[in-house]
View: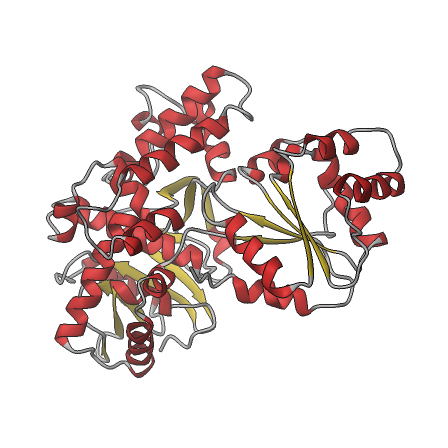
Length: 442
């Protein structure tokens, strides 16, 4: 399946001056190994794969007291592979299993710059944050791989023509035909079932959208695997239990009327000090996404963040719906009642993160709230998310009056359009992937 991150891997390859080892971060089973193997096999003449789970002799070597040069010489012998051949790449998977090897990446970059190295690992972000070793800051190129966004989902479904049409209608602010609009919305609802985890999407493709044959246990297995990995990094069973409690509370947190994360939703009487470490683990592992509260929507947004107030979204909307135990029929028929808005908002958060946007939301001291704020070349753009055609909003009207942005974006099931009087651009839920950081959004 095609992944858009491939073009960034190609850009890394094309840079021939002082090339840094590349480290790919992301949630477990987001496709890190798959995309890096494909890249290495296609783009390099000589390729060798090392999995530190399976090749513990490499871990032992780098835990030894040999010098860096001696370790490198013996690594070639262990692998029986000349790492210094021209057009060679080394892929080190599960690299979190060796803190010393992570530290040695600096040596590779400085002394063996002709060798290309890519790395990946489960919960690598947690390992890096909690490790006590010397991380080679500035000597590594880091990329993040997220679950497949909706555009990648459409690619997997063979809907390239629909992608082109959506992008064209977005650029021209032109409505799409009613029949195609409904087709795209149905595909959006299918994505709400699968989410963006590659194995889940692949299963839907293989069953040819036969919802009866689609295997929903895949998402259960993925969620369970997260917490199996967790046992390697938590300090105690108590911490593990706290992390699971926080994660289990997220669906309820998202429907919280206060529109912020509340520790009391995790357990009665809980305070931030009780679960700060648990939240830190979930964010470092990319299992949850944090949206920061801003009360003054000015540039730079990060400078006006209220650090103690935030929202959390699950990293994948398919996993959210799986945790909610929603039936496929209810999702496909849009019979989700009050949770429609929650699900649509989590979906948009997922898409924005895939597009490289930081997550911010606005709220004043009263009840006015804007779901997202985008920092663009045209200033701070407010974004409101609606799960249906009912798009009336006092909050957005008040925000436009108070802060006078160049325009606003409303994401909903409505077709494309632009209200010149109100300065509101309508974007269908299936077209969020058009809101790239590079796009001219007006």
